[in-house]
Length: 131
Image (cartoon, one colour):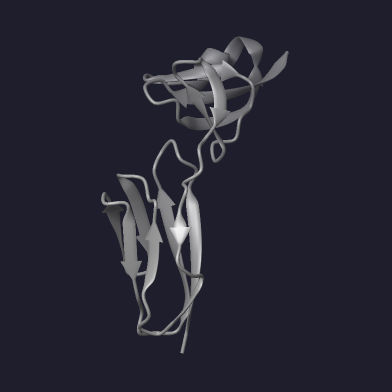
């Protein structure tokens, strides 16, 4: 019989992959440090709660974004960023530990900021800088 499965990282509950396999082959889907469980769950939205031993929704980052459109050399402010969040953006990446980001650009255009911090859901913020 074919079943759906999800492989999780045993020490964090982070979803590694999901798919379908023969029921007898479910344990073969995981390697050391991982666990395969029956059922298919999407990694962007769920994780395995180690205490409850079930899949739960990943929490959303409760961000406050000052504006989605700013002028050249104006300052964008994002607050409420969880400690240890990885930030990727055009021109670099950094870790946010103080809960906030202030950013400006002297070039008009559209800019993406990708914030990642498990178990939070990844957050993508698009900012338009106008001349």
